[in-house]
Image (cartoon, rainbow, N blue to C red):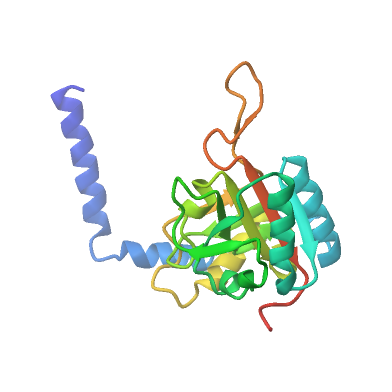
Length: 232
């Protein structure tokens, strides 16, 4: 870059900044967000809850996730224990300090060992909740924070996600709305990270051969819970 072009760029920046003096950039951003019209909602997502559940299961299984549906939160340990035994996976769980996950009676199943904390390399299974689950693509939406360490969904080779059916939404746009509403009174409008998880980690970079677990968990097991745990 020549000295002349560099100076021209700096002059343009100063001029733009001068014109904006006295205005609050943050206020303008907040006003724009508040007035933002929602994006288009695909028709396949505008369906009633039971059809959303069926679509979510179908789409999640299409991308190699495993899904079980149980009636009550108390049924989750049995479903998880059976899944781990079927795949010969060590039944040692590292759980998120999420109120939903904490309310699961893990200790009532003798085969399971459950502790809390962030995901570590030696943990065989990470257990999380989810802010929402998107029916149109079988996608989980996880927001990072003290109650939801990101590493639990990315580091252990097996990720178990417990999701109340009540948290199902049809589309991505609705999932963002759920997250905004959940954080309405939070200090920041959004968490540091929002992870959208569609099936286990994968790549086909080498000879177009699909390989699971390339950059994260090899397995994703989703347990849908019919019980309205938000009101329980």
